[in-house]
Image (cartoon, rainbow, N blue to C red; front, top):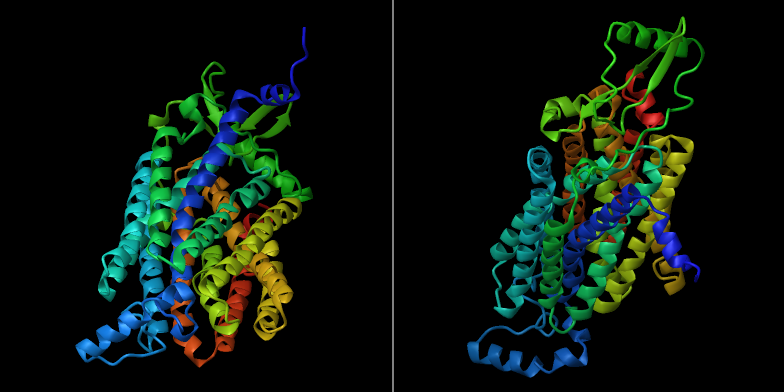
Length: 530
């Protein structure tokens, strides 16, 4: 009899639960990659909407005479510098107009995020995500259709951006809730650090796709990503599994935390647990139940009697606890503090996301495609930073400290990047990767592992319904900063790009202050011992 191939032996070594868990991790990764893929084209196309036409390539120069003849026939002034720009972004205030596109999308995203988490808790995650991805694909493609139908109305593009910002809020609370349902806290920082690289992977793919079309037909830079995100919406409808109970899989059991309570505190805690539970009846051992991943089994012995403090949820999902209110989620220790930290961290990250290609095109004199390609290096650094932040926070059990150290290093790195712009391509590559790692590392940690930890905090007594709302509050507050950053960059950049970097360094300092603020004694364990 022939031996079993190593590949088959490897595949059969996984349990049924592990297969489902891995499948869910990969699927949600791809779903949110598609979301971010559809957000990136606007930053690449900016340099095509307003170009220095004296530097136009050979493909674009063929229409120069046609534009000149039309201007003479219509008696309109003709500019050699802006003839190839796309109206209404051919005006001198084009940076403010492009900033308005960013602000309209991100402001709608920030406002919609608060409602999205609450709505998402009360609807099927699978159907909610499917609707959001199909709608997002539609609006992304409609922006690109403005090229093919020769639309030059600013209100049209702003409306598309607002609508797209609202429907994109369906993504983040849903995928984080789904992952939180499937994975426990033990290695949550590492798992979500790797998983959160979908943000950077989506940005990279979106940049490459948009850069491929931007010089010849920028409308396709939006249409193609729109088709991709809509197609992934269909995949979501067909394959997403919201909860382990849906396929009769056991939930991940949490490990007993170490180094949380010591000495006299441990003795007092155990006494309180015993007094609270000694009068409780023991549940029927034949009843099928699941231990939520955010809860901890704590046992005490007294006169040979062992009592166990657990929070069990019936296998019937219809009897799950009611969804938490918005104010109730705000009272969870650490939610407000990390929300404010993310506000400033996301301000920095999204300024790079929306303005880095334009910065490289203006300061380094790259063409649109080259600027788009180089901007992906910032996202490569983001992948490294997100994974590194997750590993360190799991090892040290200090999420807040990990964020603080990375933010502390980010400020001088931003200053160096703004000062060494003309020192060659190798220096630019190193600085882009370094800035991406230090800026996106805390951002990734807060939006994933920290949000999931707070959403399954022990004060909720096993009510996992809070996860979507907590995630929406944290990311929604961060999205306010994401809206302000590109807007401020559009207003400040005419005075010089160095001033934009000073603004980013100030925001980074505020994020550092919020990450190091411990709200109170009751939540100190939450912030430092996740």
